[in-house]
Each structure stands twice: as structure tokens, then as C-alpha cells.
Image 1 (cartoon, one colour):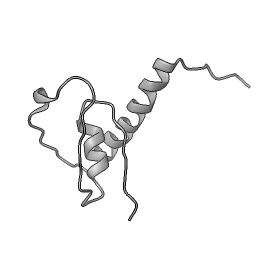
Image 2 (tube, rainbow, N blue to C red):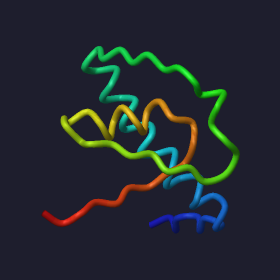
Image 3 (cartoon, one colour):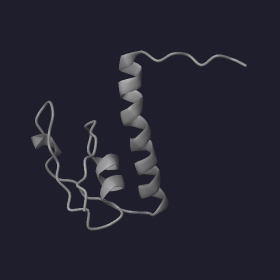
Length: 78
């Protein structure tokens, strides 16, 4: 069996952001969803907080596929 290449920290950081983005983009394409984006030029450099009310199942794929920043998610316990 061929041993897998060890990823550097930089490669790993890139991977954990690009793979979910590919997944989300695939969902949006398969469902023929259209998203209109305005104001991306106003995003500051560095960390940003986005808040979603999560009213539907497409919040996560929409955000992941359209916002050109790496990000993660937090949630509250009901």
C-alpha cells in the first residue's frame, strides 16, 4: 500500500476550506440555485463575523459557495 503524503500545516489549512467549498458549490449547481451577491468589495481583510438565522437548509451551502473567505461555524444548543 502506498503511503499518503503528509500535508504541511498550510496545505491542511487550505484543504479544510476548499473541500467544503467544493461540496457546497456542487449542491448549488445540482439544485440549479442562483445566488445574487452584492458588496463583496466591502469585506475587510482578516476575520469577519457573518450571522445567519438558519431559516432553511441552504444557508450553509449558500454561504460556503459564495463568500470568498475561509470560515467555520458555531451553533447554540436549543
